[in-house]
Image 1 (tube, rainbow, N blue to C red):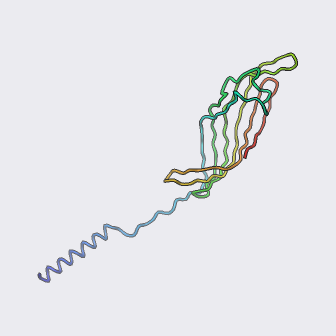
Image 2 (tube, rainbow, N blue to C red):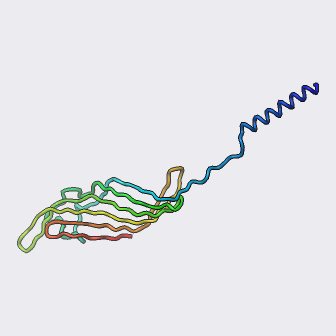
Length: 171
């Protein structure tokens, strides 16, 4: 082979190596990590279950349906609420929220001496809570999470013979 042919093959080899390098690009540039901190807002709606049909005692004892019955939402109903929170990083958050539970309606009666009185009952209930939240990322945009906190449930009730309010705390 002639020297000219060797030089041509060498030039073609160098050109092909240079073209491959140009196509491959430079070193990989990693994107900056996502910033998970900041405020967030959740809105919720659904079904709130309870069993007022068999409730007899405690703070609502005057509404024991021994002379009456629950007529509306005795086992629950539409509930809605929401919360606002602050996420410190990918794993930890704190939040507080409120939920309005279904109103329960019915009729009841009380016995005062020899006279019985029957009338309507209405119970409104809502919940306030504050919690810490821990999230475990499973895949992109999908986390398992758990909350630990304290809640206050408020009951406003009115009916024959008694009306009032009660607050029940849970932790």
